Length: 197
Image (cartoon, rainbow, N blue to C red; front, side):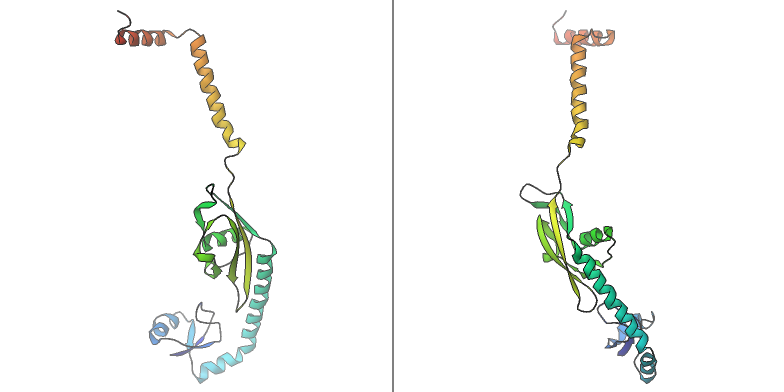
C-alpha cells in the first residue's frame, strides 16, 4: 500500500516521504495513529502545499544535527568502571551506558543511534563510538574507559578506627579489674573446664 508520511517514523522515513508499506501495517497501526495518509492525488496535492513548511523542518533538523555533532566531538567522554588488575571490566559499557553519560553532559541521544564496538565494551581503553545523527550525518565520540580507583584513604579510616577501638578494649580489660559479672562468668568457666574444684 502506498502512503505519505505525516510525521517522521523511525526505520521508515520522514514527513512528506512517499513509501510502500504492507497493507496490514498501514491499516492496523499507521492509519489509526494518523502517522500516514493513503497516497492519492488529493493527499499529494495537500503535501505539495506544505512543501515549504516540510523543507523548513528538515533544514532545522540538519542545523541541530551539526550542532549536536560539534558538542559530541568537542571533548572525550571519560567513564570510570570497576575493573580487575588485567583491565577487564566487572560489567560492560553498552549504548545505554553511553546515552546516560551523555545525558549527564546535557546531550540527549537515542541509545539506538549509538554504535558501540561489538555491542559492548568489556575492557579498559580508548574507543571510537559512532553516533548516527540526522540523514547521513555521524558523530565520532572518543570514549576513554578507565578503571575505577580503589577505596580512598577516607573510606579506609572508619575500619582503621574500628581496629583501634578493638585494641583499646582488649588492653583495658587486661589492665583494669574485671566487673563482678565478668569475674563470676570467668570462675564458672574455669569450674566447667575442671581447673577449679
